[in-house]
Length: 114
Image 1 (cartoon, rainbow, N blue to C red):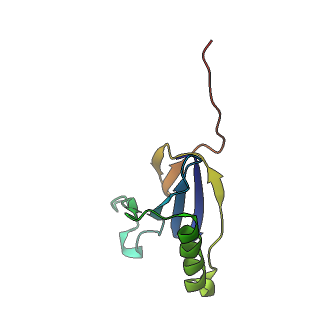
Image 2: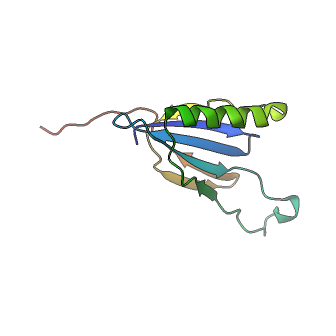
């Protein structure tokens, strides 16, 4: 996938829309960023699990736009939807003390060997 759009919802969910330049199709990945419940915090509390949901549907450009508009409309009262960043892949997820962090390249560069 060459382009990924990351958009938070409720500041606790990320919707990642992935597409490539070679095809106009889009896939959606939903990542839960919500903090653990208050009873599950503290020094002896287990680490929160990373919750990633992959939408099995494949969207064309029009359908992806409609999906984003529906999410925006449905969550307008809580801040709606905003584009956070454009990036070029997901390297992985790293857990630090405050939760999970996504590692992703923000530039795309082709390396050539001589």
